[in-house]
Length: 125
Image (tube, rainbow, N blue to C red; front, side):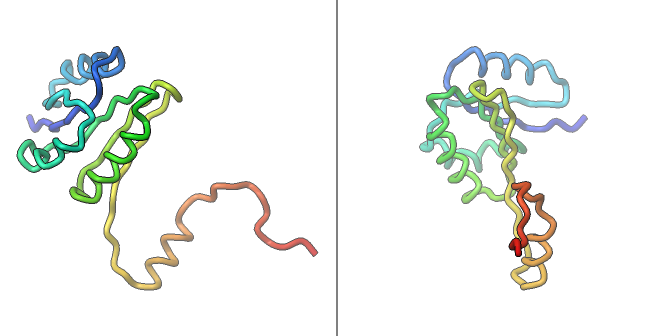
């Protein structure tokens, strides 16, 4: 059975401990960590080769986690990052994709993304 290698990041907390316990019960998951939220560990990502990074964040860590997420995606664009936050009771998924740099791909991409507002975009006469 192939196992997904999941790197767990997060300060010691009930959330991080609960996520670690959950992941370790799964037969098809190999847990790496937990590691604390420290950008100095980023060079080790190439050594441990995770398939996914799961970040269990507390409200005080959100700014640090955003910066760390950006750094990881910049250095390892093929990794998927899942951020779990207790403050908003949410799961956020971060990925990076490289697309051909052609005008038609840009236009198609813009048109394929969901609208973030419900207002009319056409001017009223």
